[in-house]
Length: 242
Ligand code: HEC
Ligand code: HEC
Ligand code: HEC
Ligand code: HEC
Ligand code: HEC
Ligand code: HEC
Image 1 (cartoon, rainbow, N blue to C red):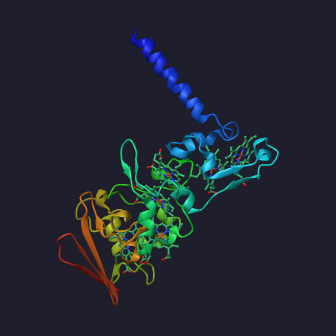
Image 2 (cartoon, rainbow, N blue to C red):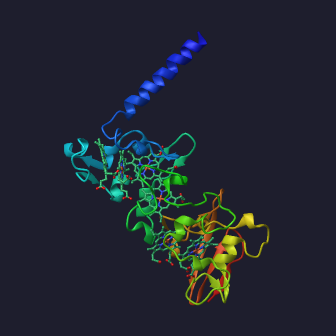
Image 3 (tube, rainbow, N blue to C red):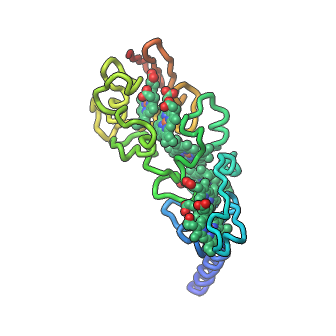
């Protein structure tokens, strides 16, 4: 009896899945339905959300006879609200970008430079690696997404003039934070870029977030004539001079 019910359930699931996946794109683009990290509209076969294919394309006559919507608006069709998934709440990206005074330069060109629309082997459909935790052992690969566009020389221990503004004299504060360079604890305590910066947009200059940590603590930045000053949580302000 139990096995029977199970068989019916499994059969139902498979049939349901086939129906959802049965669309005109699958025979030729099977790879777009299978990825380690999947994306709802692609896995559901909602290809038409971002593509318009002509009969000539579907018959295989003209591979170019199909359009692709690369605008952020195509993403905002769904990401203009919070999305509850099985294990977390995805934030409203449209609001996060449009209501912030400082939009990250990397976002101006659209979402595709950092996200793959169909699926990815990296977290959050990213085009390269990025840690989601506040702390990680530093390596250029770990933060691959940022160094696709930014010069990795900004994190070397000794700064030559012009490599980073986040330094105190010749001490590179980027290196110090991301590698936990003074090893106050261990290399595992290297701070992720995301502790201080938001990859989409932020309320303070230099894409600096206004809070950080699992129980958000305030982060207040003040530009100085030749450096900056940061007050985090209840600690006394710390400043740096270039
Ligand atoms: C008869 C086979 C076939 C079908 C059916 C088909 N495609 Fe294609 N498509 C191709 C081939 C071959 C290419 C060229 C190689 C590639 O980019 O994968 C292509 C390329 C594309 C491209 C890139 C076009 C470009 O200018 O580079 C997009 C986007 C695309 N297909 C979307 C779709 C969507 C969406 C569907 C379903 C509505 C679909 N295709 C159905 C065969 C097909
Ligand atoms: C959320 C929007 C979105 C959805 C949904 C979507 N695509 Fe795409 N697709 C894109 C974008 C944007 C590109 C261009 C990516 C680039 O050039 O970096 C693209 C590129 C492609 C390409 C050409 C490049 C490649 O990756 O092979 C094919 C083929 C394709 N899509 C097929 C599909 C199929 C089949 C589906 C449904 C399973 C689908 N897409 C669903 C946005 C989407
Ligand atoms: C048809 C609605 C829809 C569209 C259009 C859409 N998304 Fe999504 N997106 C979702 C849903 C639903 C989820 C959460 C569940 C999932 O992905 O399986 C999601 C999740 C995501 C995630 C988080 C993935 C993860 O692993 O946590 C990213 C990043 C993302 N989308 C980016 C984009 C980008 C970039 C575009 C435009 C190219 C886009 N989305 C267009 C519905 C959409
Ligand atoms: C410069 C790279 C970059 C660009 C451009 C970018 N993102 Fe992201 N996105 C990230 C990174 C890194 C994360 C993971 C860390 C985080 O959530 O702060 C992320 C996370 C997300 C998530 C998951 C958010 C959550 O609450 O878990 C969504 C959805 C998303 N991005 C959508 C978009 C959309 C839509 C666009 C275009 C308007 C876009 N992103 C442009 C880098 C980028
Ligand atoms: C697609 C390219 C691209 C990617 C990927 C990218 N950025 Fe950017 N970023 C830019 C551009 C363009 C600017 C604006 C010009 C500039 O200041 O260099 C910028 C500016 C910044 C700034 C502000 C500079 C200032 O002083 O105002 C910060 C901080 C920053 N990015 C951090 C990051 C982090 C962290 C990541 C990884 C999550 C990342 N970026 C990934 C292109 C990118
Ligand atoms: C402890 C906080 C903190 C962390 C962690 C951090 N940054 Fe920054 N970052 C800053 C501050 C503060 C500035 C502004 C420096 C100035 O101009 O006064 C800055 C500036 C930048 C700039 C502008 C150019 C420059 O170097 O001055 C970029 C790009 C950038 N950060 C990228 C990153 C990337 C990528 C990571 C991770 C590998 C990262 N940051 C980690 C605080 C941080």
